[in-house]
Length: 268
Image (tube, rainbow, N blue to C red; front, top):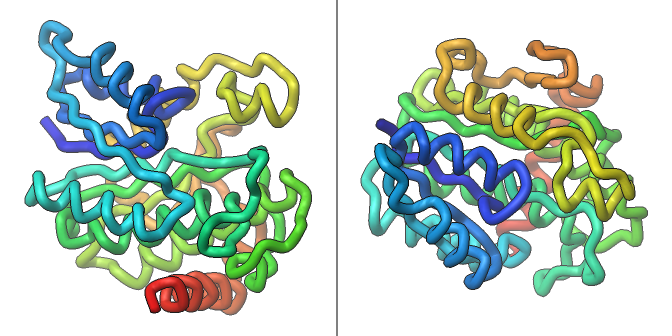
């Protein structure tokens, strides 16, 4: 059985994925922003016959100091982490500027998972997997937008943040090979019935089980064992090419450099 951290695990695809993993007997580390929702999720998932252990970790991923604290808390309790599922994401929110002065979509969707992954690498080695929640919505990234609030529309910021996530996934996978974990970006399926989809698009959405199933497969199945650096599009049900910029080494390096610069500035 494996130890698996799922961010954004109190609702939507993250919650459904956590349910599947616990039911299979894995130890699942549930992350959430709201302490009450975390407690309710822990109560709902704990104690299933044959089910795995459940732990909870509260952190606001729009604050890089809390991302650091989350990684420290996980490392304090575990010497090994088998899978990190960077599921937490933001599309629409009343407060688009974080305390660090960033657009919250870039902070939560791109920079926080990058920082969390970097901090947890010592627990993963080359045996682990990092599954990053990408999207079919991908747009060319302005690297300057990673470091400041830009006044973009919700959808533009979201689409850029998801391509930026996909870009650093491939870059990190290549940089760490063969000594790092498998790192894969996954579009879990378009317009699934999450709160994000309902608020962002005003539609009920498709069955969340579609997304939970592919995330579980990405985390555990042999199909993804040699997929580091790849992008899986669950709309087509296959590995695919992301937005063309996602395969452009120069543009990818600009995005990664921008993320590193943001983190260095915040750390001062």
